[in-house]
Amino acid sequence: MALSHDDLWPRAGSWPAFAAGDDADAVLLGVPTWRTSLSPTGAHATPAAVREALTRYSATLMGPPAIDLGAALRVLDAGDVREPDGDAGIAETVAQVRRVSDAARLVIALGGDNALTYPVARGARATGLITIDAHFDLRDGVSNGSPVRRLVEDAPEGERIDPARIVQIGIADFANSAAYAARAAEWGIRVITLDEVRHRGIDDVVAEATSIAGAGAAARIHLDVDVDAADRAAAPGCPASIPGGFAAWELRVLVRSIVADPRVVSADIAEVDATADTDDMRTVRLAALCVLEMLAALTTR
Figure 1: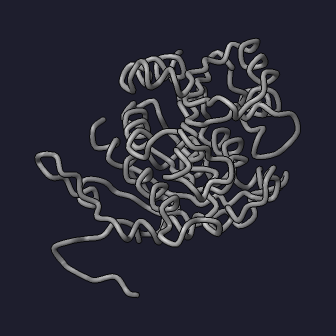
Figure 2: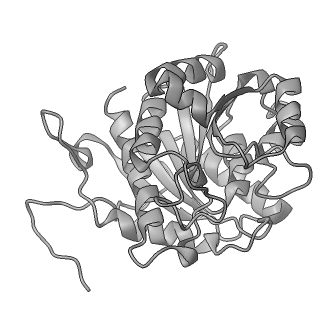
Figure 3: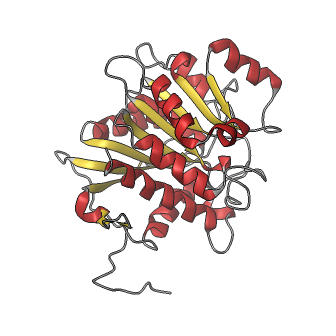
């Protein structure tokens, strides 16, 4: 069914295409990784689904005063990386992210599975990393379970991220192994579990995370938003989401609070399988709201 039209109720999404020479506050880029996923996924269908879901929302913050993001920000869309998996796809993704990163305050990469974090963070020249994720993503090999390890060990010299500048928020019980927990501790990664977030509060956790990931001169933080950190009731379209994860509002507040830090130059939204979502597309819609939370954060910088 076609969406209604009202000149006084502008919809989000459908932003102009990015072109060489453009400057923007934010640029979207689809990075539909899926071929190395540890579980069957149709995550390659998700960037298009998120773009469609964005049009179901307005781009207005209630304030007060109310702010129309469409008027306050210049948002552009750079389309999709055609084939982001494999060595050639990684190289192409790095190049495309680098191109748009040079023109925007924030690059928002629409995944795809979590494999996209590796090339997107590299393309954005990230020096620090914050993940919102139920999982460590420190596995050996090449998969959607390995991007954090790959950024530490596999990236070319000069593009690796010091694990002392990595913060992982939302790591959950019964979703990881003791061996990978030990690897995170050995490397000096700051792990803030789901329980710790709820005990301390979001503001306190975000202050610590941005301080660690943003340490050093000319710091550049990449934010990885793995939507499977959310409760399975809110994110049934994430293959690895579990009951008891972040409520949708908690995930949204975390995203906005982190991106409000001007050292955050790039972000990705990962692990949503649009082909496995519920009929109401609640997971895809939550991912779209995370995009809008990122844009809202830009207006507060």
